Image (cartoon, rainbow, N blue to C red):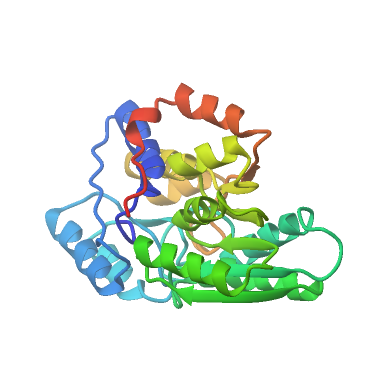
Length: 303
């Protein structure tokens, strides 16, 4: 149960489906069109009513899922989180990136290496003011920038509206032509920012999250400087493998086999290491993508 419908999820779903096919499982994927916690919870309850064996969900807001996870437990259905965690909900385990604030700082520290000496101006974009993932990746990044003497501007919430995000980026660049770098927390921000700066005589650094098809092209052109690959394919692949183990072995036994605690659940996490994709490494990433048969499973950004 994902938090929205977006091309970002193509890679994650490919991992789910690849592992499920190998393990003889059926995977049903659903999500609200845009981030909407009430719709996400309603969809989860419909899946429970349909009789699923395990319920996996993205912990969009970490404190929003306690009741539905308890309802699942009453039905004997274990829950797991992927991509974003709800660690105190009673879910059995989590597969995804490290906590968003830590990852925001991780991104900020790598941005520092791309900036010239002296105080710099950084433009920001976000797609949500409340979602834990967006807030953490923004807050952690901003803290690193300010701790190192840099200033930030922008940050208007586009509400996952790609067209609005593009307008916000164009406005930010018009109002701040001296901006030294751009940073956005959602996958489409990186592609949009790269497209917006393509024709500028003075190109700011573009550093963002995820590797959409457009972002690959912009990396190959040298317009995007860094796109963070969080290994979302493996979120799906590892989560599906864990689900199969929970069902076939038994929840407590499976957690022990995986080196996890069947009682103290919050620490049950699997976090593949994120990787910074650059113009120098993007071709290697493209080969990995091709080797895993993802080229025909990834859609382009809709605006």
